[in-house]
Image (cartoon, rainbow over the protein chains, first blue to last red):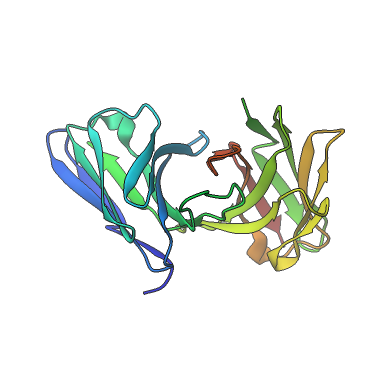
Length: 117
Length: 113
């Protein structure tokens, strides 16, 4: 595998279910991101991790719980979601690290299409 | 605060015609600007980025963009559209000191034969 991979690619869940999204990057990067892409809205940054430490939580509801066990893996745990949470969830990574440059290019995975019934 | 506005949610061109996708930014400090492309069922791919070097930036697949400070614009162009260019295009600005990207709403490019 190369680049950034995400599993599953599609997920349908009920509002009472608990599920997890997985992201893995094979680029040797230190920073990882979760974005939400809804129809007709700009991409919304949800979380940022740098060297496994969360550096940004963009006022995301607690029903979304991220986990970053190492610099290569990022999870998004989901529970008691609402239908309005249906969206494409994109993971990205960048070189990051100490003194992260603002010119870091972010590399995106293909996304997980989530449908909440 | 920084923001990006993409003018036109849908643009349709004929194959071989000029592609022009518009992006205007708002920033109180010199910005870093990006264009990403998203093909159906795929993630975003970087086309090009402006980082305060040359104002005319060349990217992949024949695309280029020009940073115009006086107009606060960073429009994306390609001289001749190909069918394979049909996709959604996102302009983004980077917040200084964080590397965080703020995206525009996207422009869907349709290429007609």
